[in-house]
Length: 417
Image (cartoon, rainbow, N blue to C red; front, top):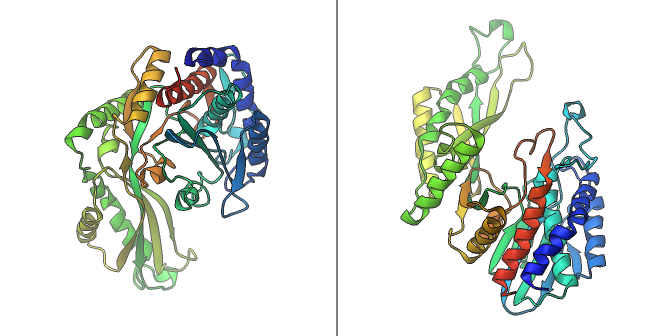
């Protein structure tokens, strides 16, 4: 088949693709509250029927990985990554439909994981099975990484695969995570956890205004100053200014929040957890808060520590310490890397509008490939409303467009006419 014939095939067999998404949704694979066995078994059965060689691997039997591949040993080598775990559905009464029904309407597929990211996984599986069945002569190879531990941080999934040689010698990587059809993600912020610890002296609660030192009140004097960290700005090269400005414009337009573009090039903070005290009638002698801090490109550890010292001084609180646990550095791919241009070209041809390479404020497994020096993008169908919340859905047309973009870009990168 030619590239044109392959794209036509997707349109003609779109019902198969839509059904694939629905069936993946119907398999509960919540992380960390559920099991991944059912969905991993389903993917393995699909690959087996498609004639694609695979193996199950990993370091934790509760979070297995699948690696597979098609194509030749020489030529362009691309990794395609997708995770099959989903965040828990939560309070079922908050859903307007069964989150694991995989219901198909005229325009949408409904359920937990539709956008994040079983629709992307389905598009990838559908594309690979088509290329394999039609014996498309690829000038290169596709290496599939299916993981089941992304929602809990990825240490048993993509991180482990990258650390154990499964990503070696790759020329590019696609992570089929949700982006919408308006953008190709080419960079994301880094992150660290800031733990603030306040130490006091215990006493009987009835004497709290006269005796003891209340650790909760000490910490409360620190927290209003945490926003000082958000004044730290990233350090972008001249070459990065265009995608930066495009990213900020897109963020504000799609979310209708003026000033949201600042989240791309400045540090952001979220005081997410506070715990302190043991009983209501005891002066608490310990309290801690955990702050999620996201780091734009170029921000150094020394900048964070310098501002933290200013925060401590500004609060006037004594008996408060802090710890920093770095999770990852900000990471990015050049906006004119071959994989970026191939996906941009094919998506724009299908959609008839501009698709913008952009940075985002969140993070994904893309960082692990970028840390190995592999040009990596994120591109997948999604409705942002409902991701990690209730009433998650995906547009059927976006699923089809994504699958066609995967096939078209692969054909261009591997010289399929």
